[in-house]
Amino acid sequence: MRGALLVAGTTSDAGKSVLVAGLCRMLARRGVRVAPFKAQNMSNNSVVTLDGGEIGRAQALQARACGLEPSVRFNPVLLKPGSDRTSQLVVRGKAMTTVGARDYMQHRQWLRAVVAEDLESLRSEFDVVICEGAGSPAEINLRATDLANMGLAEAAQIPVVVVGDIDRGGVLAHLFGTVAVLSPSDQALIAGFVINKFRGDVALLEPGLDQLRSLTGRPTLGVIPFADDLWLDAEDSLGVTGNAPVGRPGPPVGSAWLTVAAVRLPRISNSTDVEALACEPGVAVSWVTDPSRIRDADLVVIPGSKSTVSDLEWLRRTGLADEIIARAARGQAVLGVCGGYQMLGNSIVDDVESGSGITAGLGLLDLDIEFAPDKVLAQVTGSADGISVSGYEIHHGRVVRNGDRPLLADSGGVPEGSVRGSVRGTHWHGLLESDDFRRSLLREIAVPGFIAAPDTSVAAVREQQLDLLADLVEQHLDQDLLEKLINAGAPIGLPVIASALEV
Image (cartoon, rainbow, N blue to C red; front, side, top):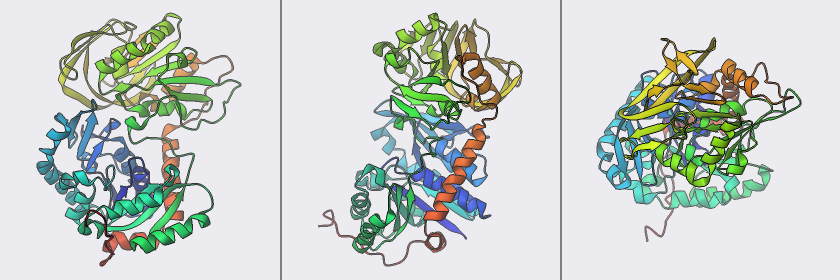
């Protein structure tokens, strides 16, 4: 097998990322040398690669599905929203500048060359490259400058399958309309469809799929059923909704549950940090935006933020800050990660991200933060009270003074993080994926009757989910047609759907 495939979606969160991960794991299990690729991603959920770059977390998961270490080649362009109008532009893992929507258009030409070069490099090294689109290819207002959808497919002559989320409703119209609004040359590359998150009897859907094929001349490669167990490594922090549960925790080992309230900041980043807690039996994790939801929680987590000062102001405006301060005064557990850690200190000097100068923190840690233009990007290891830990750092803010006991020390013995009473903080993302450290934290904050499971492995849960994705893809997609598309490309002579745009 040799070639490439692009998975596009009718909408954001239609299932592109998980389908790409499933395809990658399925092919890797067959011995195919496969790699993922997303030309341009917009997400505040990112990870650090071995070479010190930053890519979208979904591409890191897809790399693991392939049996590969994450690489900046898998996601050469990353946009990290800092407001409704601006994003940080990360190219080949390094932050370049902050751009608005109009400004970004000026960068498209040279970014197109970056994307083409990295894709060509991957295609020369691997048998198959599975590409993920961004948003929807039906965003025809952006077609002229598109890097990740039909612009990529046309430039590299890659066949496209479009996935639609039937759980949202209207999926047949979404699939038909996605093709219909495209130009004839783009339509020629749309080779088929995939239905995602189906519940019920497929026989009831089949007449609709037959009609869709009659209307478009394109087959549906398969219908993937809804799977409750798929939730780890969410693609986009901005898709995290307030007052919603995280994951599918198993029943408690002991007689009591432990509750975790994770604050859903407006500009949340690396929301996946709390997912490790949700892997634990008897640990109920929820995203919250209401002060009343954190009063009785056993642990409150303030996650990372792409706009630390702005999100700190939001904490104060909503009353969440007062409730967090009151929790600490009562001796209840609070954990801040990266931006959340910075908010817990005495002061933040930020002339880089917000340009707001000096801002008072919550004062729960004896900590002062100052932002620097260069971003800290590193994979890190160390120990906490004799427990081996690992994680990664992505932040502009530096600790310039810390009067509290450190939470841990890195492999070089340098102190990291803070502990003050029941309040903890760290710049390390992914720290809670260190199983022994997470269990130690749970035991320390445990309520009577709660017992931390002795053997939960976040890495094993992630592998199980990737294998489940591969099983779903293998069982429910037409393998012969899929292989034919990858090897030979889109069939010649696919019908063009006339649209009002053409008229």
